[in-house]
Each structure stands twice: as C-alpha cells, then as structure tokens.
Image (cartoon, rainbow, N blue to C red):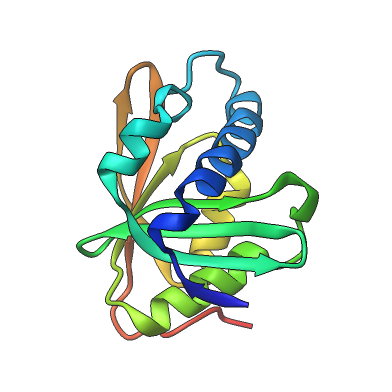
Length: 146
C-alpha cells in the first residue's frame, strides 16, 4: 500500500536508508557516500515529505521530495527489481508537481528508471568526489512510457 510518509515512519526510513545507500555506495564504487553520514536525529529534523510503500514486511520503499525535487527514492534490498521504485515514482508524479532529481552518474539503474518517467539529463556536477547527474522532467510526461 502506498501512503504518505508520517513522522512515525522516520525510524524505519532511517534503517531502510542505511541499507539502500550502502548498496548504492558499492554500486558507484565509493566508501564515503554522503547520504550514509546522515544521522537518525538529522533525518527527524529534516522531517521529509513523501510517500512510502508498505507490505506485511513493513516499509519496503520510500520517495521523499522538497519543493519540486525528489530528494530520495529508496527500496529495501530484498525488494529490488520488483517494481517498488516504479510504483512510488508513478504515484508521486501523479500526486505532486515533481520536476527535478539528482543521482550518482554511475547509478545506471536509477538513471534508466528516471528516463522511463520522462526525465532527461540537464547537467552534471561533482560533489564530494562523486559525479552527479541532474535530471529535469520533460513537460507533458505523465508517467512511464510503458
């Protein structure tokens, strides 16, 4: 079930974030991945807005945003390649005017997913030794091309 992220989800979100970002760090070949430095207290202070996908297993995915920018899209590793990210992204794009997202340039699966939902590469930057690609949503694209 997809629902709005609540403050009571922050503890589970923090645990999910640690697991998912550890795998992303390995994927992009870094041992010092800035999102892994965020503490539980910092996440609570951030008080992100977003959506979660839950199952009988608990929280299995989360998408957060600020203004019109997706700030994180996380999936529990046991649920990779099962459509969790697509479901969350589709839901959020239908509910919110989200136009921007950034991800590591080496994160080909994430970039491919965003392309499916009408995001195009807009710029590339380097932050803390990690190349980032910044994507912008094409006007008039309401979902995955499938």
